[in-house]
Length: 377
Image 1 (cartoon, helix red, strand yellow):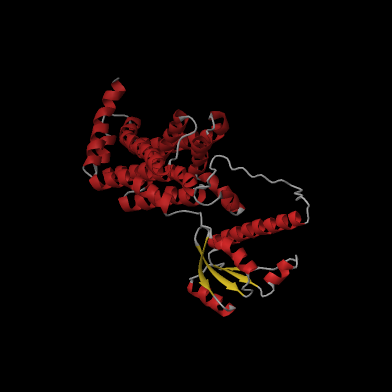
Image 2 (cartoon, helix red, strand yellow):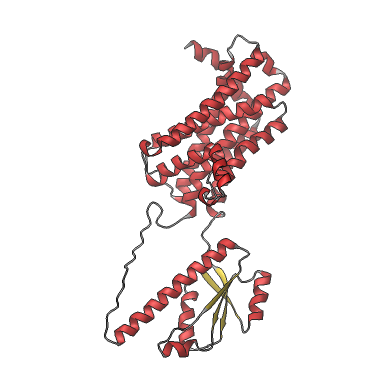
């Protein structure tokens, strides 16, 4: 009880300080909603409506039947019907077409003779992601068309179709393969880094610039009490930010928590604790808000975006970067968040990730407490 009474003035002071800075408070509370909408709707790895050029040299009923499946799909949008390779090259150079299908002159004749007919697909490799997906879509559609022709041929011959391997793919946890369900849980780490690390670093350094930090350090309060009192308001704000991500993600993208809500909030709270400790460490080694902002950004937001697996798969990174990614605590946090939210895993499936996050929080809070204690000596 005495501990709470000692912290109460500092907590109230911090809340008043936050209230006097409506711009920062507005950014912290409004930015999550904006980011969720942008990430959910704009940052989408599902490539659709790829502008397609068609070069049909056969001009037969067979070629038109084959091309019809590219016209009746959401993956391709046949926008250009060309008469030469030069026209395809021109469309690619201007970026008006991303893929092109070339049907040879003997396409119909070869099919009618029950022989294999060649079809060429050209893609603009400048956009590697779109090119890879275009190749995948076209290959799958061509295979389905070929399989249908084989079935019809065998039926005409009075024979049944033999399939050596009956491949039946099933997609678990995200059956519609929606990018939003992968990316939005990853926003937790990004927003907590923003709310906890950057905000805490700036508020302490602001005290140092105004000279009021020294007054707090020479007060009867223990340095640890000062630290706890200053981080409590930002812990509350970070929890509000995390809760808003959950709410907006559910309302806009129907992202539900399949696992334990308590386990999820335990991970969020552990991550917030580590973020606050990191922010205090940054504030202890910087003397101006500009420097604190830059150091906080470089040490938290950049690793979160590049090395945590938020956007880029860690397994596809070079080995040195995979090793370096272990320094980004968000890498382990995202495993817990995605596991709990999308797969409904329990504690025993992610205990090792918790262990690393708790170790990170203990180290950062311990370093910051030690540095603040030195300031009072």
